[in-house]
Amino acid sequence: MEIELPESLRSMIKEKLYIYTGGIKTIDILSKPIVLSIGAEAYILKCRFMDIESIIKWRFPKPYMPPELDKIRSIRTEIEAKIMWKSLLMGVKTPIPLYVDTDDAIIIMTYIEGNTLRELVDRIENEELCRICREVGDYAAKMHINGISHGDLTTSNVIIDSREGLVHLIDFGLASFGKRDEDYAIDIHIFFRSIESAHINREGIMKDCFLNGYSSTAGSEKAYKMLKIVNDIRKRGRYVAERKLRSEWRSL
Amino acid sequence: MIILGIESTAHTFGVGIVDDSSEKFIIADEREQYTPKHGGIHPREASRFFAEKGPLAIGRAIASAKIDISSIDGIAVALGPGLGPCLRVGATIARALTVYFKKPLIPVNHAVAHIEIGLKLTELTDPVIVYLSGGNTAIVAYVDRKYRVFGETLDIALGNLLDTFARETSLGPPYVVNGIHVVDRCAESGRRIVKELPYVVKGQDVAFSGLLTSALRMYREGVDLGDLCLTLREIAYNSILEVTARCLMHTRKSEVMVVGGVAASPILREKLEMLVKIYNARLGIVPPSYAVDNGVMIAWTGVLEMYSGIVIEPEKAIVNQRWRLDEVDIVWR
Image (cartoon, rainbow over all chains, first blue to last red; front, side, top):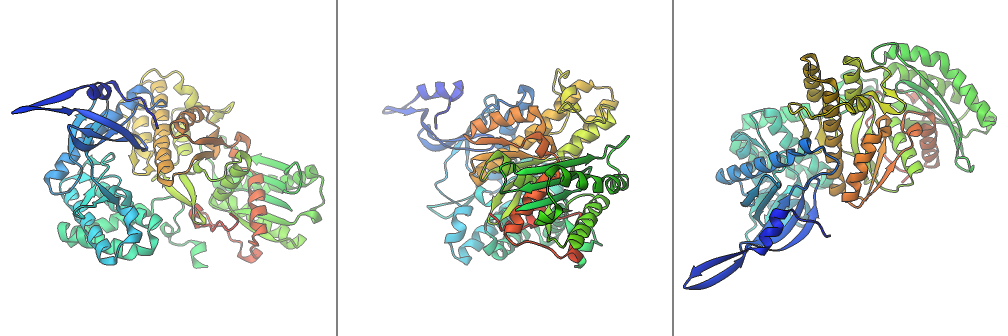
């Protein structure tokens, strides 16, 4: 896939870094950008940035959006970078942002070599699956205690690095700062729904271990409160029979 | 196979007759639309209107198809989701006809019918379905024997948002004039995007009630109506585009189909065309006359179900106002 990169990235490709340590070491600032995928709002490219294996996330301009509304790209980029930093500080493993350009909506971050949880679910034993989901639960709780919600906590956004098996969260594109329990509960709701839609045969263990990790960090009282809100959220969808107590259909 | 379908979930009483062996395919299509004098649909008033006009529409359908009722192979009816009193009129008529003429009765989910007629008319095979109407806003995709909801509105539907805004600002009813929604029309005079209105996308879901409340508050505070229409429209459409893109990437499908009453919007169509270009996907838009509620879609889904042997005993054919799209097993695919 060929795409037209923004000027800021194109000019970076031409530049070099010279390091004087006895001799002169020359490093490309940015080299070999290759498009990995196109997401709902951004291109994801792999590259070498200052000689580090990196990912470029570029929220490209949307031709169907009026420019004033498309500014949401800059806002989201800024929030995403801030949240990644804050998460790293509180012990949640995420890629490390190396370069942030809010005008062009670009974040360059470290690349994590590994597989997503979504890919791994069908290949790993219960014990390992439980460890990963527990860790995700612990991460979610840590973020929630610190006033952050991830916003898109699906099994595709959990990466287990292939070297040490460490669990990382990625894609903070919909993450937000906020003190509302509702936003935190939506993280849990989305994680559960991604399990139900793609890994229904391992639903029990994944949910239990997630909740286990969540309660051990946030406390069982908070976890219980969250689950109650999750149930409320589910009933908000269209035409949910449970919401109406005396449904003729249910009595059949 | 010839199936007669009855639709009466909301404001349209529709009777369609489909003959899948005929070149014409749709051999009858009769509709009676209830238009409230003011405000939204009043379920009781709509159902009275249906009870009055429904039998006439059925008579007209059979006459225009130039067939005898004995040559019909089955009667399909939309049992939900929708407004209870309205659904009951269609269901009662369908049950009476099946018992009297000794025909099989086929239960049809209204939302599934929207999708099936869309697939038939757009000739797409496996699209991401953007289902937008007065009562529904959902991003749906076929996975593993069901039309699964990937994202939906957590509160009010897109059509509901546009209609309510139009009503509260005296732009409507009628809400759609010459195929264009009054909010789209009013947006043409908008010059700037109002920054303070909220853009809410939560993962794969959207929410519009906050947008509606804020827009109405600003309208009362004297913010220019054209600007508000433009911003409301842009935020609402673009949030749907965003979740559509997310579903496309998630399911890795390469087609997008728009169904439901709001599918007719030319503005939305234009935006979706730009979107599918980025993702190298194909766009199919259900023709407006079949994107809105109609009896033909019920009849066609009836044909598909009949081939798979899905029929229901009349005494068990009870309407279900909350029959979710993803509860239906799609055995005919």
